Length: 231
View 1 (cartoon, rainbow, N blue to C red):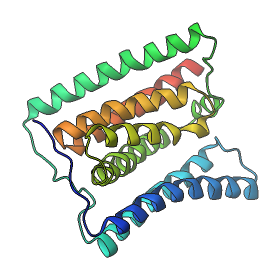
View 2 (view 1 turned 90 degrees about the vertical axis):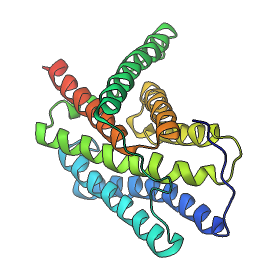
View 3 (view 1 turned 90 degrees about the horizontal axis):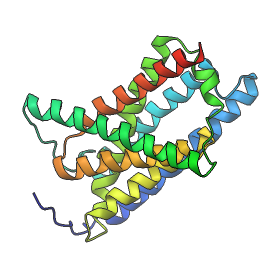
View 4 (view 1 turned 180 degrees about the vertical axis):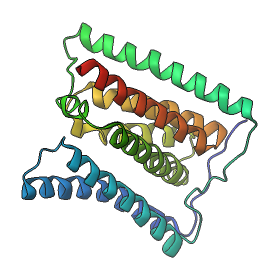
């Protein structure tokens, strides 16, 4: 099904400010979280630090909901959510997960080939996290990041461009850069690729729920495997 670009509305300045504030708040939250870590003397990759940062993530999403409700006067999901049968969800989850496995492995192999592959120091700490905390981290990322990067940002970026590919590119790059705190190239390029696949799917099918499921599965399986590899 082809998609046409949407024309900017009279509220475009309000939408623009919302997107800018969304990005700024993410970096403010990261800065505040590091300040809290320093103040109470804990590592950035400790269970307590991750717990605090995930609550800040939920606050981030809550503030966006309030901004959209009070100032934009429209749903956060500007693209109405489409519903599909069970076959769509099974096929999408299988196809997306397989694509992510293949794509991220290719990225890792290429980085190894050029001597640029390095594992994040954060993995050492995360490997020791309890299963409950890993579930909380994965669920938070799945819900908050999909609502914000795909559900909130993509339709609003589309307002300002004729080509439907720009929201995909913009949110994919931003999603990758949002993972810079992990400190390695693979932890930026990997999420950038994942964001691209998720964005393409959302652009075509307009269903955020399947992306949340895939995002959760990708994160929780990855965190569990990290824990087993560290033993």
